[in-house]
Amino acid sequence: MKKLILAVAALAATAAPIAASAQDWRGERRENRRELREDRRELREDRRELREDRRDARRDGVITQRERRELNRDRHEVRESRRELRDTRREARYDRRRADTWRDRAEWRGYRGVRAGYWYAPGYGYRPHDRRYANVWRRGAHVPVIYRNYYVQDPYYYGLRPAPYGHRWIYADGNFVLMSVATGLIAQVIMGGY
Image (cartoon, rainbow, N blue to C red):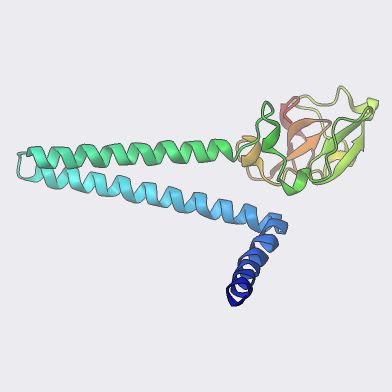
């Protein structure tokens, strides 16, 4: 009986934080970004150590078999770290071909599939298509005022380049639009981006 009570208490102690973190979508995204930064930092340190080892090995002009094996092993580890980091970044991005890439994201929580006459702005919900703005989405045009507040929260997730100073990525009728915040001038359009 005592073991059962201890097991239940241990399970409750571990399940409560897990349940809380599962509900905290922003905290999870923040944690993923932190882990990615940490992985990048570790990769930079590994590269620096490899350069130092090479320098030390060449210092006396002769590279022994043992030094060569160590350098090759270090080089292999750096390549593996780089490959793992690249794969992690690829998995963290949106992919239209893989439906599961958006499922656990907070901004897609309200998505219930395609609806006739509506488009979905992640984080903002369904918005009706307005035929007046069908031909607006081209470079050099201006974003209508009603679309200017649908900001893309995490451009990296969608594989978008960072917006230059004074610009923001917005959602617009299923497209990604890079817009000047001050004037609404369209700098770039990615049609059917999500």
